[in-house]
Image (cartoon, rainbow, N blue to C red; front, top):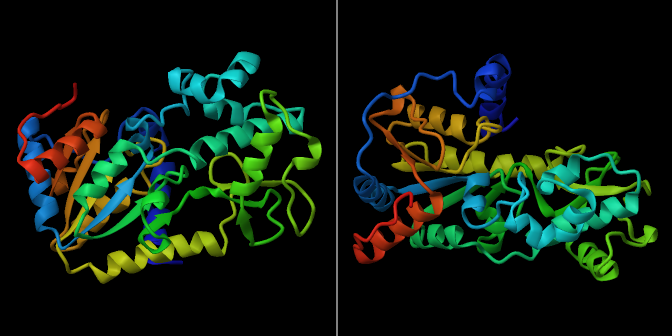
Length: 330
C-alpha cells in the first residue's frame, strides 16, 4: 500500500468511528476559534503563500467544479435541465446522480442516460475556476490530487501531474470486475449519443461490453458501481505518494478546494495530517460552506469561506495586477 493510500485508510477508519458527526455536517476534530481575517487580507495571504511556496499540492473536489457551473449532480436546476432535460421530463429526476441510483428495468434506456452523463463531462470546456487556478500555478512546481471524475484537470495537465483517485469518465471497466483492464469510453459514448438523437434510448446492441467476459461495461468511477481498484487505481496513489514524499522537507502549500462532508478522508484530513507532520508545510482551504481549520493548524493554515470561483478570480487578479476590486462572496 502506498504512503498516501495508507493515510486515506487511516482517515476512513476515523470516518466510520465518528460517522454520526460527519453526517451532521461537522467534524470530530477540534477547530480553531481564532477570528478570521477580512476577505481582502485572506486573498493577499493566499497570494503570498503561493508565491513563497516551493511547491503546491492542489486538492480539487466537487465544490471546485460546482463553482464553475458543474452543479447538476444533486439538484434539478438550470444546468441539469440544460444537459439532461429530456430525461428530467420523462423520469422526473432531481439531479444527475438521482438518475444513476434509480432502478432501471430497461438497460438500453439506462445506457442512453449514462452516455448523456459521460458525454456532458467528457466534452465540457475547462471551467473558469480551473483556468484561474492554472494561472495561479504558472511557473510553480505543483501536483494535483482530485476526487473529481469529470476530466477537468486532465484537460489542463499531463497524466503525471494529476492523481484521479476516484476514477475518470474517460474509461470503462468490466462491471463484474473480471479483468484489471480499463479501456476508452470516449468513442463509444460519442457513438451512443449519435445513435440516440432526440430519443431517450439506444439500440441494445450498442450497450458497451467487456471484451473479456462479454458482460456489461461500466465507467471506471467510484460511487455507483463495482469500482475497479486495480493497477490504474494504484498508479494514482503512487503518483501523489511520490510527490509528497519527495517534497516533505520543502515549503509545500496544501491547497484544498471544495471538499464536502461526504469525502473528507481523501483530501481534507490527509492534508491536515501532512501539514502537521511536514515541518515547513502550509495549508489553505477554500470552501463556500464550511469553516474548518483544526486548532493544531491555526498557525500554519487558513480557511477561506467564500465562493470558490470568486476567490480564485480575486487571487489571480491580485497576483497579476494587484487588483483590489474584489468580488468576495457576492
